[in-house]
Length: 250
Image 1: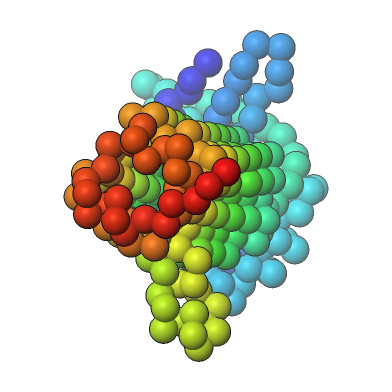
Image 2: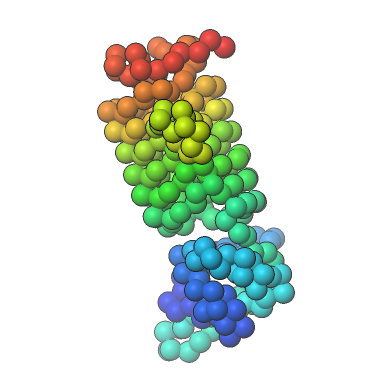
């Protein structure tokens, strides 16, 4: 069951402690209900960095939440009422359902997402420096134009994901100086990249043991990337791209 809300209102307690008290900017509120399961309300957004600890402390497990909508007659109707189960800080997000959300231009630098359903999300023009996606479902998600140096997608499902024009290079000057980002490019080890798109991307990626069937590397700069030699003939690459890749034996 999918509910479309014309007007969203939160209980006074939640508004005063979370939305107003911390300057929380709400991206999206999502209400899911499946058969034989509880309804689940997820709201995601950005909070000022200097108030992150305050947010986690105040939005604790006992925060009451109500969600109302306005019907065709202008009357407020209650469609969700519960107690907040958990508040997730950006550093580690685990086992959360956020599929289908619009998170364009979000900053997830150095966050860790573990077993998160991140499928069919819009993440265009975002900052994913050092972000770790561990065993996440990212099928069909749109990462176009994002900066993702040192990002890690190993063991993720990225089927039909979009990485066009992303920037994920290895910065050799940073590596020599020991700077903490831009050293490793981006890791796709053992990821499912079936029919993913990397058009015009700048990617120094570790693609070893990744599923590369149907991947579109048209116009991509793959300098510094690693692939298994077995994928050399099975992946559509230009001669320039082939010569820029480090081919690895199994």
